[in-house]
Amino acid sequence: MKAEQATTEPITAAAHEAGFIAAFVVPDKRSRYSEFLPKPKRRNEILGRFNHFFDFLAARATQIPRASAFELARVLRARGAGRLCYVIGGDRDGCELPLEEAIDTSLASPCGAVISCIPGRLALYLQEFPPGDAFILSSK
Image 1: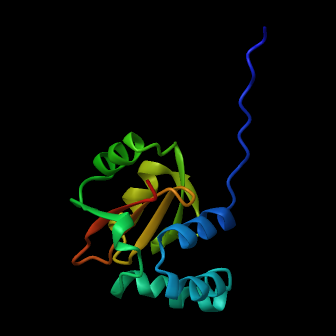
Image 2 (image 1 turned 180 degrees about the vertical axis):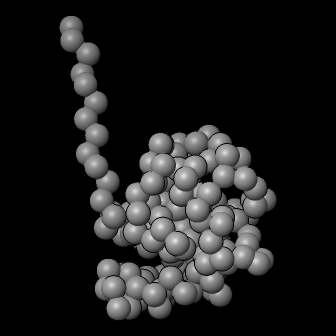
């Protein structure tokens, strides 16, 4: 009997953003996030919120120590993150990058960012620095 080959469909930016909004953003902010993130002229209004507001479901956010990209990637991989992720905010907004590179560039940026590892299931939120707190966003 031949083993089945796993096929992996590429995950789109829209899927990462929609999953992030549906799973982690507080209900009263979801429609605004959904409306503004896809619009280049309005996107910065949402990204700016990563710097000053915590619009995420507290029950799905676990604060972790702000550590090196290597250490944060290790924590995310232990929870199921793959090789690539999608960055929302920061200096690499809208880019799909290798996980460690995404974390490293987001740590170096003074702006807040969300690193979506598994759409709607696992992400890393890095607040504006300082204070620069880090949170695992998980729907499990």
